[in-house]
Length: 87
Image (cartoon, rainbow, N blue to C red; front, side, top):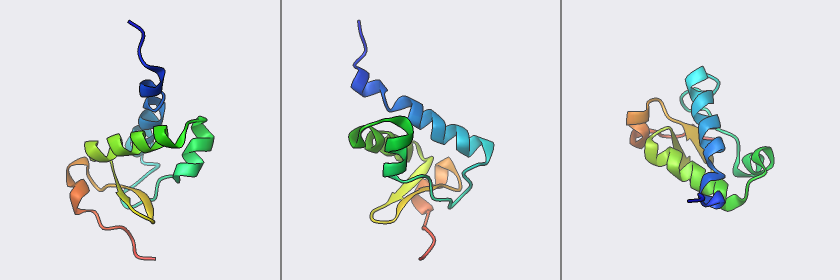
């Protein structure tokens, strides 16, 4: 059975963010690249990028603040406690 390509196109993006967090390149409270930057970097659609960010948030790797961006969490288990830096 062939996998739906649209479903799996965002997996490299998820792997990229998780790997950068594990390597310490994204540290707690760091803003991860914007949706537009990720769209360009991965040649992905906005829908795919949003799916990936949504999955990362549900897994506790990031938290997204409307109008501000997505940020690396201090701990995967503490995603709900995150408060982004004030601009």
